[in-house]
Structures are given as C-alpha cells and as structure tokens.
Image (cartoon, rainbow, N blue to C red; front, side, top):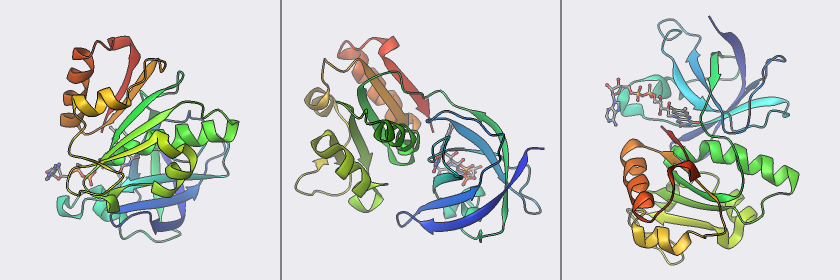
Length: 222
Ligand SMILES: Cc1cc2nc3c(=O)[nH]c(=O)nc-3n(C[C@H](O)[C@H](O)[C@H](O)COP(=O)(O)OP(=O)(O)OC[C@H]3O[C@@H](n4cnc5c(N)ncnc54)[C@H](O)[C@@H]3O)c2cc1C
C-alpha cells in the first residue's frame, strides 16, 4: 500500500489534459523528469496503478501532475475526470528514466512532454535554459500542453509540429528526417525523447540513420 495524498485542486490545462495539485508528503523525494505509480483511493480503483510524471519541482510545496485523459478507454484517466478537491490518490513507487544530463534537443509527443515540463521548470529556476530546444508533436494546436509557458521561455527554440492542422509558424506532419535535420544542432550533445511507442521507434531509427549515437539518446516510452 502506498501513501495517501489529498487533491487540493483540479483544472483543465487543455481540452483533455488535467492539472491536478495535491498535498505533498514531507518524506517524498524525486528528481525532475521522474514519475510515480498512482492509483485512486476509491472502491474498485486502489489496485489500478498508472504512471504519471511529477510536473512540480522537488522543492515546491505541492505535488502536481499534468494528465491526458482518455474517456473512451474507461480506465484510470477517465476516473480522474470526476475527482474533486478532498479526494485522495495513492502514491506508489517513484521511478523514471529521464533526467537532465546537459543541453540537448528535447523531442516530445503529446503527454510525453510532462518530464520535460519539470526539467525546463528546474532549468528556468536555475537560470540555465541555455541552448536547449523543444520539438513538440501534437495533432492540433489545441493539444499543445503549456504552449504559452514554453513560447515565453524558449522563443525560437520552441518548435511545434502538428499532424492534423496546417498553420503558419508551425511545422506540419510528423517528425521526419527533414524536420530533425532542420532543428538538430551538433553543438547539443543530447537528444531527449518521450512519447508514444510508434513515434519513439520511428524517431530513434531516423536518429540512428543520421549518425546519432545511442548513448546520446535519453528516452522514455509513455
Ligand atoms: C513513466 C511514465 C510516465 C508517464 N507520465 C504521464 C504523465 O505525466 N501524464 C500523462 O498524461 N500520461 C503519462 N503517462 C502515460 C499514462 O501512464 C497513460 O496514459 C495512462 O496509464 C492511461 O491510463 P488509463 O487507465 O486511462 O488507460 P489505459 O490503461 O491505457 O487503457 C485502459 C484500457 O483501454 C484500452 N486501450 C488501451 N490503449 C488503447 C488505445 N490506444 N486505444 C483504444 N483503447 C485502448 C485497453 O483495453 C486498456 O486496458 C506516463 C507513462 C509512463 C510509462
């Protein structure tokens, strides 16, 4: 059994992404980019564990998650839609493969941006944004999580790629070799990659074909 954590507030970040703030257990430690297994403290849901990434920083007073919901799956994220302040989640193990190692090109698909929200917030707090870049793939502009924050923080180093919408100032389609060539910078030692399986596999093969060494790629599948 994990730790009970109480919901303080719940709101919509986009049409299908929730931002949930919770009371933070005093003993909890994690690194920006890490996730935890979470379940809901309601009858029938306590043993249904799903992984979500902390989008708050370790030093913040509250815990925060940014969660894309899939009502059609009738699973945990659908249940989260009916949470109200005072409800409880159960925090299980903390884990995660993504941690900041140095400047890089961050490539995210949809909710795969969540570890990067925490990492960029930490860099922002330390004044170390430097040359880091974010390439963010979504279906439409309405799906972009933290659009205003990343635009302000990164300026031209924030590039959106939309597969189902054509807009000026946005790349259109999937993240192809052409797009990777355009935004990769040989000065950046690392590529951080997080998103759904098919996107990750396609991009990883392209990166290998472009000569990027496996050790330069830091990845996590969602
Ligand atoms: C390390 C890690 C960190 C993560 N962090 C975050 C985060 O911060 N924010 C976030 O939003 N997500 C995050 N995810 C993804 C998140 O864990 C999943 O979106 C979540 O588990 C979905 O749970 P669910 O119960 O709603 O649906 P699921 O458990 O995915 O699905 C429930 C049921 O629906 C059916 N189903 C599954 N997939 C599909 C599909 N593609 N189409 C139709 N039916 C399907 C299956 O029958 C399945 O049993 C993370 C994942 C990992 C591995």
